[in-house]
Length: 123
Figure (cartoon, rainbow, N blue to C red):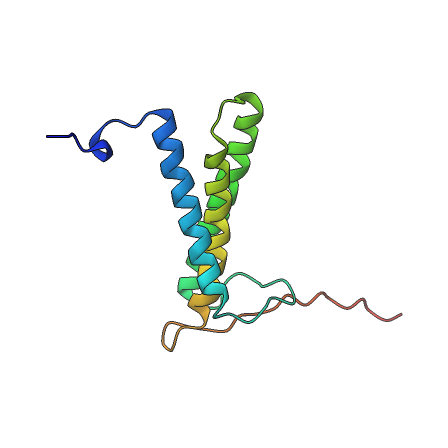
């Protein structure tokens, strides 16, 4: 009987392959969701509904993790690049998922709010 390789302890190579596949899967999900969304023409404010707000918080945590990994990669060049790619794709996916969540039917959805810069006061 041949042992199942997925049950064996990961080596650096198999772990990198798994992370790379996971990043590619996130990219596929991003692409699929973006087909259902209107194009972004301005910055979007976080929030809109509870689910979207929570996804934006998760995105913030993922972005901070990505920044930490970038600093780590500067000190540890042997860090697998697919880990950085996955962290980047994860935060992008969470942003797109928040845009999808806001469009869910009531009572879950809400309204996507565009950032509008303040107009300077007239003298």
